[in-house]
Length: 465
Image (cartoon, rainbow, N blue to C red; front, side, top):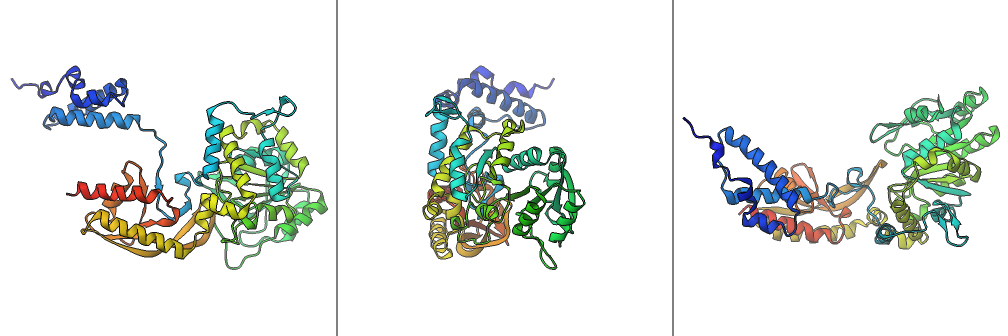
C-alpha cells in the first residue's frame, strides 16, 4: 500500500509557529498570515498530488510570509513613470502639485466647510470654492465642477439640450477611451443628434441649414483631442459658429476635452486649446478635464454664461455627478497656483514636464545612464539616446516632445527580462521597449524617482549573481 504523500506536509499549527511566521506577526495581521498559509498549503497539495516533492518547511514558511505581505499590499500603488507619456491614462494622468496633495490631506483629515458659508453661518455651495477662481482666470460669467469631463458633457446636454436637436460635425463624433462615444452620450442625455457636413469638411452653411430647417436648436463643437483629420479638410471656427448661434438664438456648447485655462499657462505648446480663448470666441458653455493639461485632479470643469451654468446646477443630475471634497480641494489648490502662470509652470508637474527643455533632459539622461551603468554592472550596456515623448491623455496626439532617455541595449535578459524586473520592483518602474532597447525617458521622472530606479538596478545585479 502506497503512503499518502500529503502526510509529509507540516500541520497548520506547526507551520504557523515557524520563526519566520512568528516574526511576520509584528507587521502583518495574524488573520492574513493564516489565510496565506491556507492558500499556500492548498496550492502545495495540488503540486504534490501531481508528483512534485514536498518543499522544505523553511521554504514553505518563506513563501507564506511573502503571500501574506502581498495580501497587505494595496491594489492602488505608487509607480514610477519612465515611459515619457506625461498624461498617461493608465497611470492616473496628471500627478498633483505638492500644494494640491497637501490640500487633499487637509480636507481628508477632518471636517471642512464644504457646503457651509462661514460668513453667513448658513448652508453654502461646494461650487463657491472654485467658481470665483475659474471666472477670474478665464473671464467666464459662471463656473462649476463635476466629477469628470464625461459627466460635464452629459450634464450639459441633459440640462440644456434634452429633447432638442443638436448639430454636430460628422468629423467630431469622437470616441474617447472606455467606449465613450458622443452619439451614445447624446442619446442617453435626451438630446437629438443632427449630423452636419462630412467627415473631412464641415462648413458654416452646414450648421446654418440645420438651424433654418428647425432640425437643430443647439450647436455642439467637440475638440478632436485624440485624433486629427488632415489633408483635404475644412473646419468651421468657433467664432463663426458663435455668430450663427447668436443670430438664431440658440446655445453654442463646446467640449474641449483637454485644454489649458489660457495660452500663458503653456507657451511651450502654443497649439494647446484654451478655455479662455473658447469663451472669447463666443462659446456659451465650455467644458474640459481637470486632470489633463490643467494639471489637477480628475474633474470636469464647466464655464460659461450664468443662465446656462445655473440651469446645470439646478438639474437633478448635478447631484449625481457632483465633485467630491478631496478632488475639489485639489482643484482649488491647482487653480490658486495657476493665478501666476510662470510660477505654475514650475509648481505643476504636468506643466513642468511639458515645458522641459531638451538640453536639460539630456543632462538628466546622462546622469541616470551613468548611475544605471554602475548599478547594473559590466554585463549591461547603457547609453543616452534621443527620444520623443507624448502629451498623452487624448491630448494633442501628433505633438512629439523631443527629449532624451537612458537606454539599456545589451545585457542578460534585455529588454524583456529587465523590463519585467523593473515592473516587479517594490515601487514598480514602468518603461518602454523600442527596437530591442529598454528606454527610460527622464521627462516623466520626478527627482526622487531616479534613486529608486538605481535601487532596482542594484537588485537586478544582486539576483543575477
